[in-house]
Image (cartoon, rainbow, N blue to C red):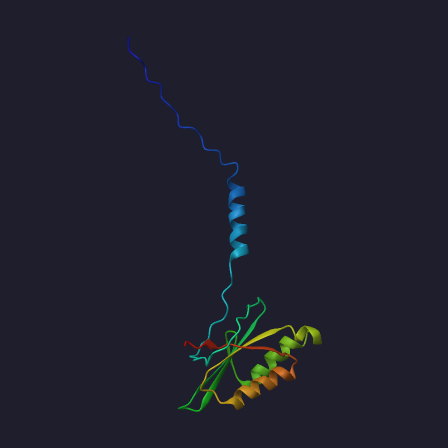
Amino acid sequence: MRWKKKKRESPEVSTASLPDIIFMLLFFFMTVTVLKTASAKMTIELPATEQSVKVNHEASEYNIYVSSNKKEEDHKIQINEYLVTMHQLDDILKNIASPLLDFEKLKVPIYLRVDKEVQMDLVYDVKLLLRKHGLRKINYIVKKQSN
């Protein structure tokens, strides 16, 4: 007597829960992803300090980079990803501050990254513009000095 082999069919995989799994993965990656902040379009060597405090970066932040070239005696200012002049910086800061109330302006974080070769009068001019528009929460970014 010959045995007949039955053709076995492979079991079907249920895809009913697949949309739920994809939605959960999408939601997870949307919540944990950090958007890239602007990077400097110029070379900046930050000054070193012995004492510094780590600052938590917030989502609505403004980064101002100030660089100077000693040989050519010119300076560069960048706010977030835009290279600007002092007059343009004044206009941008006015646009940032104008819709805000006075107490809200005190909460807007400004992160100031200044090259260690920059003259202080340029930094002072930038600070005057910030003060003119009521933006007074200024954080200086430095590098930690190694002992």
